[in-house]
Image 1 (cartoon, one colour):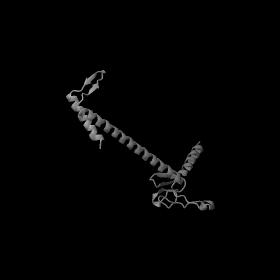
Image 2 (spheres, one colour):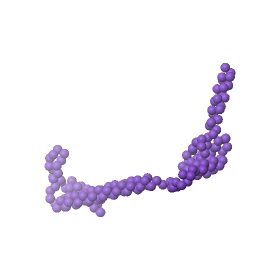
Image 3 (cartoon, rainbow, N blue to C red):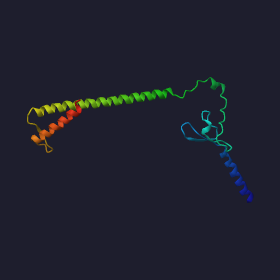
Image 4 (cartoon, rainbow, N blue to C red):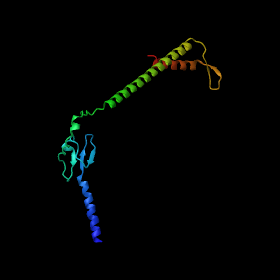
Length: 162
């Protein structure tokens, strides 16, 4: 029984040795990276936090030599042309939508201005103005209601007619 316990403890210790073969570094975006492989060559030595064997802040393991077929391949610039094109198209679409919204608002303001000027002309003419109330009855505006409506129309004209 003692041999069995001793074997389990030895196996547990041997299994945990795999964790010592871990690299830890900070990538270019500031995140901690844990791996069983060394960091890429573009990671500076100061960003390596731990390497296998427990030693901290050692130089990164050099990258393996590139095969001949990879050497003849074009270098990647890090910019995806299709992604950039999609981004430009999305920005153009968004700008067009904003312009359409601005045009729509300008047309609504012009319509409000025209209606307010027409209504003000009716009120200024001195003709009796009648409205339909919520019961469906027709009522003539008195001087106080007429003055408040003229003030409201003037506010609309000053806001929308520029």
